[in-house]
Structure formats: C-alpha cells, structure tokens
Image 1 (tube, rainbow over the protein chains, first blue to last red):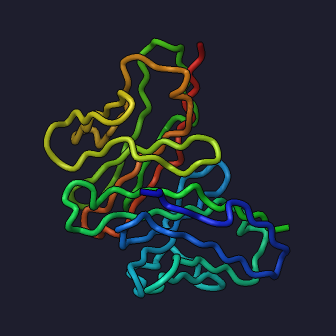
Image 2: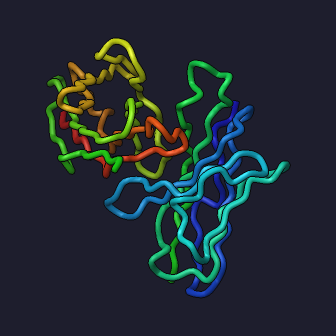
Image 3: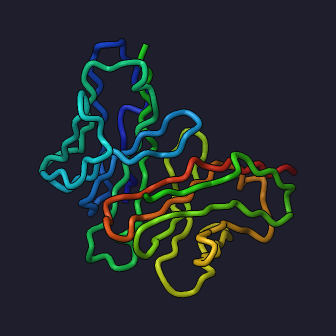
Length: 118
Length: 114
C-alpha cells in the first residue's frame, strides 16, 4: 500500500504566478488535510476535506488560496498570484474512515512540496 | 484557545543515554495527544498516541510517552537513545470538540551523539 503521495516535491514560482500542489491519499483513506510549515516553525492547519466536500477551511488565508478533493483524482491546493511569503513546505496528510476504530484519528503524511517563490 | 508547546528547540543526548522531549498542551475537552517524527526532507511519521487509558503509552522504535493530566504534559521518552533517533519531533493535540483540528508544536530537534 503506497503511502501519501505529493507532487511536485519542489516547486519554484515567480511572484504573481500560480502554484498547484497535488496530494494523493493512501488507498482507502477518505480524509485529506493540508498543512503549511514555515522555516523553524511547526505545522499550521490549513484545510480539511473529504471527497467533494470542504469540511473545515478555517486555517486557509481568505484570498488566493483554495483547495479541492474531487470525486476522482488527487486533492489540489491552489495558490494564485504567489508572493514571497508563500514560500514554505506544504504537507498533505490523510486518515482512514471513521469505521477504522484503531487508526481513524491518526494522520499519515506525505513527503511535502517545498514551494519557493522568487 | 488550543495550543501545544515544545519548550526546547533542541535536545542533545549521548547515545545510550535516556532521552526526554517535552510537550505541554492546552485544549478544550479531552485531549487526544500524538507524537510524530520528521526526518530531513520527509513527511511526518506517526510514533504514538494517547486517547484514554494508561498514562504511559508505548509506540514505535522503542519510544514511549507519559500523559500527565495535572501538569497538562505529554513528554516523549526513550530509555536508551540511538544515533538514528536524531530527527525533528513534533507533539500534536487533536481538539476534543472539533476533531478536524490538529495543533502542532514548533518541533524539537533531537541530536544523539555517538
């Protein structure tokens, strides 16, 4: 069972461009979380999604950031008109459905996408 | 407000010695507490969790953590450190009311020297 996949691993954008980060959860996982990690800081929650639903986006900046988790395909975190302050590592995590009584509350993380804005 | 604090940016320990990485928390409702480890250029890996039951929780790679409700702490421990344990360790708490929300500490870098 492959782990959580994220691509690209490294992404370089110039100010004003768009960044698209992809996340494929572990097989059988229906919950996806996105986090941002700034240098020397911990992870900050951004958004929690289930298939075709945004459940909690209270950690997302109000502008330029959006996320989706379509019925088919990976979850996408989209950052429009990037600025230098968006440079960070973005991690995706997935968790099993609630019926998995042992591990439903445990998150499995991808390797992250490191975004650099020039 | 929910929060997690890891008071030490870095912990240095000699191989074979016991190690402790500290974590304190503040959360509404019952705490669900986790430890994760991050190796360079990798994602976080789950180590252990406390939900309920025994205050001493055993996890992967010989790590354990002790939940102390009165001190609102969840320190990570290992009796005998290995050089390969050198990594970044994150404590996390899941909001007792809003299960969607996880709060992570800022991380503690563990250096184990031969």
